[in-house]
Structures are given as C-alpha cells and as structure tokens.
Length: 520
Length: 81
Image (cartoon, rainbow over all chains, first blue to last red; front, side, top):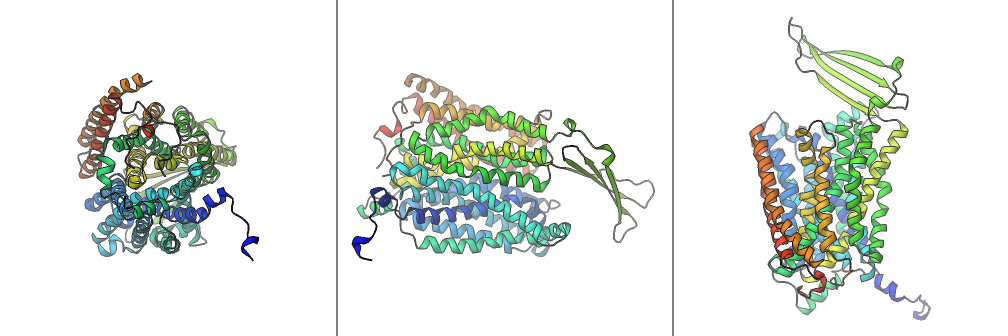
C-alpha cells in the first residue's frame, strides 16, 4: 500500500491513537491486583483454619494484624512509597513493580504450608505476604490512573480513565467467580468438593494469579512511559522530593485535604457499603445461603459495571463533581430503605409456609475412638414463593449418663425463590449504580487536581485513605453498631450515611465542577 | 458563598477533636469489655490511623476559615507546576 492510499488520521484519532493498548495494559494489571487483594478477604474463613487457628492466641493475634494492618496502615503507606517513586522514576516502572510485588505475594500465599505442617512460621509468613499485598495495592491504582490519564486527551479523560475504574469491581467479580467455580468443581459430589476446597483447593485461586501476572507484566513491559512524565524528564523538571512538595506546600496540601474530605471519603463508604457490606448483610443478617449471597452480588456487578464507563463519559460533558455527589446523595437517602427491603424480602414471617411439606431428618454418626454419638437434626421449611429454610442442629449424645451438650451447634440459611432472588439482585444493582456514580469519574477528578510532577504521590494518598481507611472501616463499624444497638438491624448504616453526608456537604461547598487542564 | 465557606471552617475544625473523643471513648469501652490483646490491636490501629486524619480535618477547617478555598482552587495559580 502506498503512503497516499493509507486512511488519514483525523485529529481526534491522532489524539487517541494507541490509547486502547494503554488502557488494556493498565486495566488488566490493576484488575489482577484487586483480584489478588480480594481473594485473601473472601477466603478469610478458610485461611483462618489453615494458618490462624483460634485455639492458639498468638496465631489469632497475627490474623488480627493481617486484617487490620494490611488495609488501614500499609495501603496508605504503599501510596506514599510508590507514589514518591512514580513521581521520581516514572509511572511505568513503578506500577510494573507493584504488579510483580502483588502477584509474587499472592502466588507465595498459595504455597505456604499450613500451621499444622510448619507451626508458627506459617501465620508469620502469611502475615508478611499480606502486608506486601497491601503495600503493592497502595502503589498500583494511582500509577494506573495517572498513566491512562496522561495518555488521554483532556476532553475525554473521564471516559478513558473510567475503564481503570471498572477494574476494582471486576476484580471482585473475578475473585468471587473463581472461588465459586473452584469450590464446586473439585468433585462431582458437592459436599466432597467443598471439603476438598477447604482442605487444599483454596490454594488454586492464589496460584492462578501468577499466570495472569506474567501475561500482564509482559504487556506492560512493552508499553512506553507516560508522555507527560517524559516531557518533565526531558525538561529536567521532575520533582526531587514529591512528599515534601505534595504535603509540605500549602497550595497542594489543601488540594489533598479537599480530595480526601470532599470526594474520596464519601466514595470509599459508598463503595464498601454497596459491594461488601451488602453481601455481608445478605449472608449474615438476612441469613441467605453462602452461594446465593455471592451470586446476587455477581449479577448486580455484571449489570452495574458498564455504568462506570457511562458516568466517566458523562463527566467529560457535565463535569465530575455533581455526578459523584449525586451518587453520595442517593446513597444517603435510600440506604435505609434498600437494606430494609432486603430484610423484608428474606423475612419468613411475611411468607406462607407449606406446612405439610416440612421435612425433619435426623442422622446419628459414631464419634471415632469413643462411645459417644454425633446427632444432626435437619429441618427444612418450604414456602409458597419458593423460599426454603434449612435449619440444622448438631449435638453430642454422650454414652455416660447425665452428660449433655450444653451449647448445640446450630446453623440456619435461606434459599430464596426466583422472584425474591431477582428482587435482591435489583436492590444490590441499585447500590452498585451509586458506586459507579461516585467511582466512575473520580480518577479523572483526582488526576486533574494535581500537577504532573507530584501527581502520583498527591492523588494516591487521599484515594487510599478514603477508600482503604474510611471504606475499609465500614464492615467493622457497622458490625460494632449492631452489637451495641441490638434491636435495630439497620443501625450499621449510620456510619456510611454520616460519612457520606459530611463528604457531600464539603464537596458541594468547596469543590469546583470545572474540568481543568492541570494534567497537562 | 465565601462567607458560608469560612463559617463552616469552624465546624470542620471542631469535627476533628470531636471524632477523636468519640473514637477514644468507644475504644476504651470496647477494651474494657474485652480486655484482650486482639481488642487492643484492633482499636489501637483505629486510633493511630484516625489521629492524623482528624488533624487533617482541623487543618482543612483552618484553611477554609482563612479563605483558602474562597476561589476555585484550580484557579488560584498557587499550584506547583
């Protein structure tokens, strides 16, 4: 083909040439990092039995450290460490490093022998690897968002960075999917499959990560440095001390504080409430079956994810501010109602039971090396709308006269009928929609707040405090409130509602809706 | 609007210490209820993380009170470029 016959690039095509490669390379890596971070949380119960036995106080202590330190301390610390590095040596190599660190740690967790095999070395190793994961996550997001934004044309920055915004939710989606598939795919007999998963199959989601990381590292290695950072490098105007310039300079510090209190703080609680607290509420408060509580979230995420891109695109047209604040406002005014609906849908008192279909099954199993017997009584209740409630009670029948089980182990879960299941998917979808409103435009918003030379550092810290600390606290504070005010099952929502309300007021008063060109 | 922005600065300044007061009070109550190392670590982490955030809120309020946010921050021309 001669040069003349080649299709000519329009100015807009020239601006966005190669952008999809940039988005693909950045998004894939970020998605993997979120996947890696979530599988640890999703498998917390299994990991606890493998590495942190409750019978041993020191191991349980290490478990607490792994939970709290990784999310609340190490993530913001990672934002500072890698943010500084990214502003000094460049975006490309920094977020390549975070990816390797995250992938390597995740893979290594899958290889650590259990507490039964190597004793205390096991929980210590897992704790260290979890801290490395938190550190890597703290550095990844800011790099990916900055990298994409610095390649994108000013007027389409919201749209292009919104693809990065889908990765956190998709990472959760993939982690839930891989866990469910592995849990049910290890044996034709479901009970045996779950037992195998709890024994060794949980390692598979961790080990799988390395394949994804290798592919992603290969792709990222082929990418070029961000053009805006290259410009700084050529001009010799890179920051020599990004931490001092970001937080020691009043003009930048006030932007960091505004980003935190007027945007990321509210975004964090809406994000965690819609994606994590909703699932935990459905499973633990509404008592819906393990698998169903997860597939409800999976469907809601699947339908909700395109809206990240829609709101990112819209933010290029009408500004970022009011989309994000509208998401917070909707969350504030509707959370009580939506969670109340989840309670109502799953409430057996509002349903009609097929009394004659009730099943009671009792199984006696001899306990090895003793004369005692384990008795399992299972009650199944069927309802006209398709809901089933399964209650099981386990106790020991002692051979010795006069001895009884003081606290029988009781379990109860509900399997929802189709109509109620769909209703719950819709309710969670609405919450995910709020997540897409607050989260879709926020990368572009943060990138535009800070100048190129200190952008990685300046945007990473408020993001990880908002998302990791304010958001990450949601399940703990919500649970704490429900243990204090036991009569109100919705009292846990006061935390996200109050935080989002404060953020909404600050955002509405102090944030500008103008799309700026600081990124250039 | 600028007057309102400045007035609200007082609220943000007060919000930091008030939040810390409630957090420390709750932490003390929870630790007293369950005086285990686990509880100490959990609440210790919360308080340690919350202190700089509360300080940030006070600084934010101070800036707001003194008119640092009166004009659009992006328009201020103070940023390091």
